[in-house]
Image (cartoon, rainbow, N blue to C red; front, side):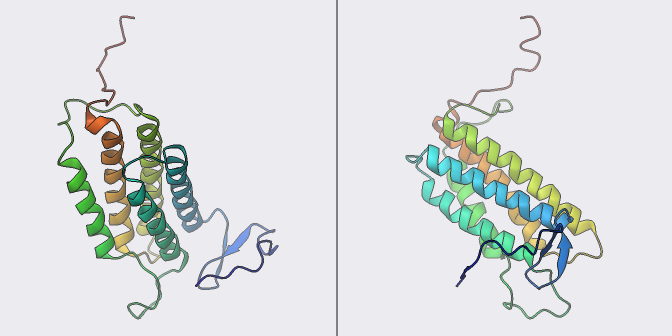
Length: 193
């Protein structure tokens, strides 16, 4: 259980913050960039839930928001040498598989794609496309960490974020009348206007 008695600690006033293991890093450290982008993604999903309360997959969005706190918790505690399984909250294969199952379920009823989809359509679809782009940035931030030999990252994080961006794309299409209302890219279509 999380218990926060104070919000203002003043410990970050000099531009550093604490990770979950107690170590201190600059607030612009790549790990903090990744955590911040995941937080931004979660807030974007909150906007979908708030602005589109009748969205049929709102319960799935709440599950994803909870998962994103797990992603942040995983990023917040660097993997230690010889870490015992289950000692820290880590993204799991089961969470990735849950995303894959949702993608398969939703994609099975979508109109086949005949072109690239322009972000937009219904308000829910537009917010979900924005969430997808933030998710891709979070994925890039985690890749930056993953490539640094000094950083120890749970490999499931990268897989989870990659699948999540796919799921957000499918959810956006679902919000556009099962893909029938997707605005489609017309290559060069506006050149003669």
